[in-house]
Length: 280
Ligand code: PLP
Image 1 (cartoon, rainbow, N blue to C red):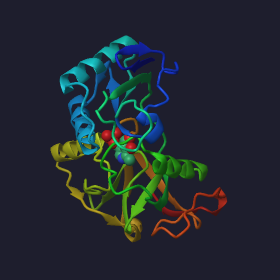
Image 2: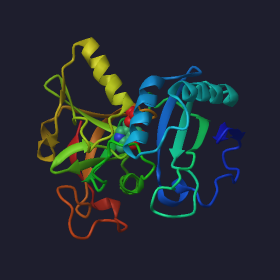
Image 3: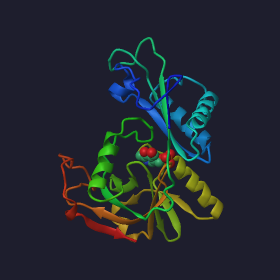
């Protein structure tokens, strides 16, 4: 395990982040999670391209070049001594006295990272999803560190005995709380298009490439929640999730998923009211 903050290797939980830090105070930053296999960062170029897109989207000047960032990541892996690891990399707008406006003059972005060992998910039993309304903002394509709706969705799913959320927006099943969502129907793969409402996952893109190589058709389209019963299979993808099969989808009468009511369902729920909406 290794931690990094603005040029220094640190132990991950040493108190090093200043109080007036914009990531800490506002969630004013972006991040990447990269999987390291056999000591090498997997699909690193794609991750760096997306990180640069996220930085540009929220108007943070990159504090280094992509090459310098790649070199840093390789050093972090070596320093950690890990072969199978997750690399968390975060860039925030920097440290300045708390003010919603961007610091003027601009301050240097803060870069932090951790490298921790992880195990493959491949051998895990198939999982369960809980269908719920997507409460995220309309720029889910940016990988920002503001993850409160994702955290609450995943915790609610967990509380109901599910592994992940199945997020529904405008009547369509588009994504999970920390992974992309896929359906199998009529020997085709179906996943939501990479518009502003989903994070265009690196694993999603890799699976599209693999399917293309294998001659499996992929349709990037929004599947209505009412069509759930018509699908033959479901899986989710993500850097740490990898490709994870789903064998059951639940709904809960108190968890809205068709559209958001005036009062959202953040209350404690009892899991025994869950109903099975789909089973493999
Ligand atoms: N969707 C969301 C909301 C995520 O947070 C993530 C990853 O954390 C993904 C999808 C999967 O993206 P990737 O394959 O790049 O890890």
